[in-house]
Amino acid sequence: MSTITLRVPPELDKRIAKLSKRRKLSKSDLAREAIERFLRVEEFEEMRAIAVPIAQAQGIFTDEDVFRRLGENFEQ
Image (tube, rainbow, N blue to C red; front, side, top):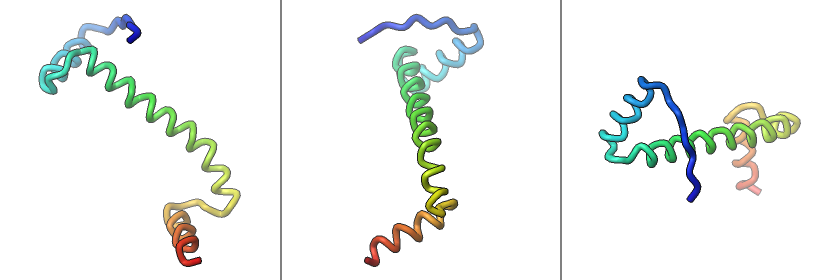
């Protein structure tokens, strides 16, 4: 496993310490979890940026449009 050194302001360090104590996780585990969550959101946003224009070109603009299309596929 690689190591990353991270400097944080004192107030953020206090918040991290409080949360890590409440969740019974080390600061490293908490930071790892936060980075993982951040990366998942970023990757989702990147995929969404690709998918939305493709969907819109096919007339899909809302959740209802998606469900309607899915329903059509199951009916066939």
